[in-house]
Image (tube, rainbow, N blue to C red; front, side):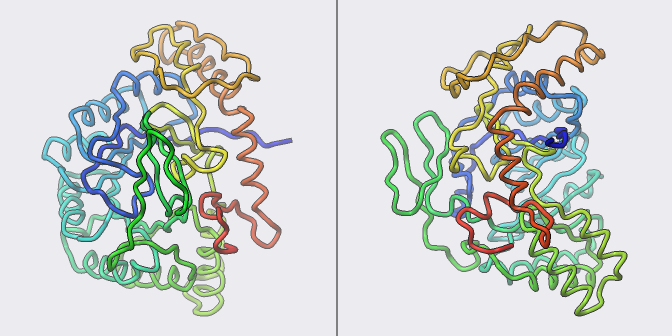
Length: 397
């Protein structure tokens, strides 16, 4: 019997427009990328189960709708969080983020000047939690050290919540195809783009640009120690639990006695790996559901599960139907209609929960993903490994 799973955290992509054009971007964002309307976001929030309390809004560049979307998300009772690149952080947007978001993460890239300036601004505005995020790859080793040094020596960053390090995923490192309807596909380097699509091939990386996933748990241990010495909190994502477990158990505990057994056990207990379709999920700008943002356009998840059948049953829908919505699975019965009890009432919450659980959270593709993720855990490695990181399997972590 599969244990019950409850959605707790959801990422919603509200815009794919971005001026940065980073060659390592796994999303293939472009300056004129499609955007979600506030009306569609409001409808999506209305179908989420009451178990979901935290919503991450994902976007590239700031647009006119972003501030409205953060206010809308908070007004509907969710805890908004987000990741920004620091570019175009106007006083109005900074104040909005500081007053609506529980956490604002800022991505670090070629130059640290812009993200560090944004972090200082948000900390000064009393944002509850500000993080600086750095991709960990073979090419970014030195930048990780530089980031720790600069943060540790800057008194204006003393209120930083943590440095958050994320492993570079091999997924979509060959070419990113954005098809005519704006969706993305993942192709190997030798694959030609489909008719009507454009291929954004990943160029040879310049110095410091992340291109090669790292396979070195000792480096994770080193980052942990450097942050501790500098008085900086540190965190890592769930996508490389094997490397982190090795760093904690074998390096920081057994080899260097950096942690006590109690501290190590506490940290290891939280490293259960992939959470996609277990407690988290991702919805793209077209209202398609995926286990996580890294799986979109990859393998069996070349297309997501369209939320259109759920949205169509809202009694007071605000957004127009999407003509490019993915077709519903023919072997699934349509979801039941949503009634019209007052928002927040027990009946309304029960209906939302039943709708999500019985139709989407119990969808055959979602159950299959959970089964595949569970299958990556073994007796000696009791954690779910990232499927985006392991296709193709470059490491045994």
